[in-house]
Amino acid sequence: MGQSKTKAIVQYTIMILLTAGLLWLSLRGLNVGGENKGQFIWNTWTKSNKGYLLLMAALAIFSHVLRAERWKMLLVPSGNYVKLSSSFLSLMIGYLVNLAVPRGGEVSRCYNLYKLEKTPVETSFGTVVVERIVDVICLIALIVVCFFVEWDKLKAFIDTLQFGSGSGFRIPTWAIVAVVVILAGIVAVYMLRKNKKLRKILIGFKEGLLSIFKLKNKSLFIFYSLAIWGLYFLMSYCVIKAFPETDALGFRAVLTLFAIGSIAMAAPLPGGAGSYHTLVPLGLVMLYHLQQADAIAFTFIFHAWQTLIMIVAGIVSFIISYWLIRWKEAKTK
Image (cartoon, rainbow, N blue to C red; front, side, top):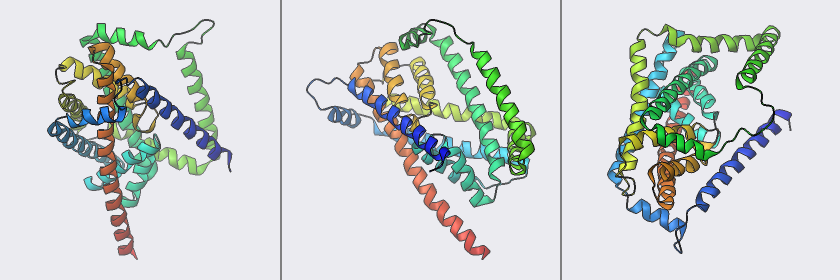
């Protein structure tokens, strides 16, 4: 077994163990007296308003369609014109893979798009990086807005996390980042000179990254980005309105919990499992004084519902893509 494969297995094992540990800690905090914990979560589900949950599912699919359209826009400047259906199917397959292999979906969706449209993987991957950068900017903006809206409560929440800086000598973060960037630059230049295949990949990657500056309609790209995150917020609002325990929470609470949930989902864990189940209940309890058992049950159902939507849409997209690829291959023979 190669060293890289061994390293990947070790990293994946650690990630799974961390996810399982966080889920166990979350369930451990579910104190429901003599009642079965699984039954308590199921009872919470039966009390939910299914209309709001179905609306949330519809909003989720619509947000994915907009994201697929935005991705399609980013590919145009590099000379790659793809169908919306192809970008959507590839995107949903990427989400499905991410549930098992964090960040693996980015590569798999580019590969699926290549199979459907012959779009170079290195170019499409460059546009995926652009998407991630835009998402990070949106997330930071959201956090800034939340801090302005709920400063006192969020500050108290962060204090409870008790990350602690410890004692002794500490290297400034900016220095660590600077050293990593310099070393990465040196290694990249060396490898680029020695490897022609890598040079081709980097050229395609650069094309994808620069695509945002070559867009004909930048305002439409900005609109799609804001609309996607607006739909994410509405999804959170629908789920919070779907449960009697959280129905009374106002706009500020939805905004804050949406920010906390987005941060948790960004963790390199399968579908945000574990981190989501730890941070969101903590936010509900510490900021809005929800009963811990209700907060944990709500979070498990919320995350499970989102995950189910991704699984169903991903599997359907995989089946459709499989038959489309086979049909196109048969045509070329």
